Image (cartoon, rainbow, N blue to C red):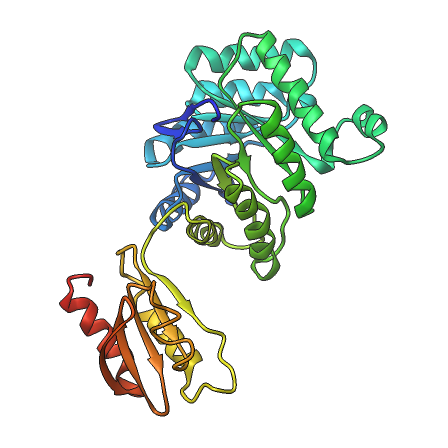
Length: 348
């Protein structure tokens, strides 16, 4: 089990629930716009939010954002250690740095001292695209071993400065490399891990990459917090993260809708039926499994583990509960009958 840190009031690691993060794409010093985006992210289910700190104005804005945010705020720092000091003084709940790119050891120590005195954790961010040249030469290029070596050296440096509240991320846009690096780090240290596939692209492919990389690691028991990085509205990152946690069996939020892919035996419009079921159960919060099946082969029998379900026939179908048929209705009444049964059972 990893060690536990606290990002504001959110525990990370040490058996705490895996938390969802995202990052604002507004100018941080535009407090009104950034606060509004944080509000939208929180409403979508985000639990920790990161903001870019490219200059002193952004660092100073963190104080005003803290007053308007319901989420802990992480300050994302690159190159200038003084911005980390300003962000810490302004009330940031976590500092994200790459110790390798903010200069000499005394600068890293200054950041560690400032964070320790305020109880602020530090995330060491190691990206495959910004590894130290000496490590690239030592390992013959970008490898999982090189990424982990970079992280371990930076962890050790913070330890020398009596700093322990550390979270680590090892990210690449290449899914197998991300998985290999995170697995190797989990074998070598107990720092909580922030998971993500960086620069994963637009939602069309980025969600697939993230589901494979993040979801695969979660299924191995690795990962304490995560961000799905998409070229999209950050709210989409949160929705994708929730789905990944749900698919990995880590969270049960609302119905898990299972449906068969259709085949030549299907005599009803199963695609439309599944889409309607998903749409009409969008606001259901019960942690149940609902099956939408196309024929008798994949009907109540194969889906008997589902809490509720419908299965098609020839213009009609059945509604069932845990494998037992409750009633038979015409195709156009199947979803209505399903919801009526769930409502009668007190699920809706």
